[in-house]
Image 1 (cartoon, rainbow, N blue to C red):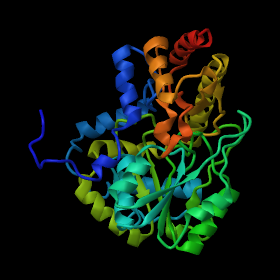
Image 2 (spheres, rainbow, N blue to C red):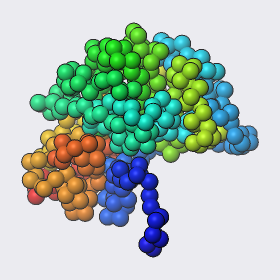
Image 3 (spheres, one colour):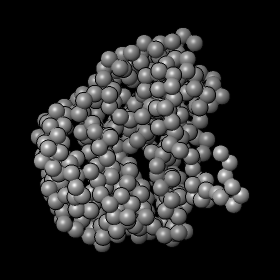
Image 4 (cartoon, helix red, strand yellow):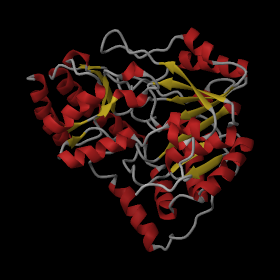
Length: 395
């Protein structure tokens, strides 16, 4: 159906596409490909978490929770933040429960940036960040995370390039650690470099820490809010999706100073009103799981990482070893396709494995020969993908 004359979409909506990641899931379903594109587990969530959700529904916790989050969940978030990060957080004035970390990010930006402000974003970036900056009437300023010279090395950024992105218009920097899609875990020294610039230019850090417990090779998650001088200028975003394998529950949150939280709560209220009440009740219990749960989580994902890493390298891809999260970025230039999109089309339609074109994580052509794979899957799923990837090596 054609639109009548004068009916049009907004200038904002015209500046970005639908999610490429989620489009790859649709393509995987269409071609019956193994989905290593979208980052959701194909294995069950913890049994105790599911039982808690069922019990909450049976107990008729089915109506609106308090707009900014059920009290027991906010108290659980505060307790876990103190236990794991050493930060004391007031659950009454500094925590907002949102419909996933995705809503938390857009709410944080809408609450803190004005038209004409600039937001610094490391690239490759999770695709929502660029769109969120545009929706907030801010201009994203991209700074490169450079791939390592060796596949087992570290992604890195140039301090001079980062400084050049800051100026009097800079309002915020978005930081994702552990990082999607690279698996980079920012070090304390790197975070101190970022802190110095935030203080010098009076900038807010909006930090996505959704993969905080998924770490490998001795990597340590350092929450940017714990860096000296950053607690008062950091909005920390987290959620249940990745840690507890419930990406469809959409329960996330922000932690921020009271004045920033007040603004976030107003935006959140008119975006979604609130997250699902019975799932908040279940989440309150999940946050009290013992340390052994998180140790097993990382250990299990380490085995999956190494399984897929071996398969990708065995197929001829340059696969960069991640230190956190559950994705592997690869360089596909050795296969001599025109670009990453053409490579992924071949991968899905002819090989039977779905991945994400690297260009969807970049603002420019830098990712035109990169592809991201997710390994949050059962070992048997990864084994089946490995068999299919062998056909890629034989091409």
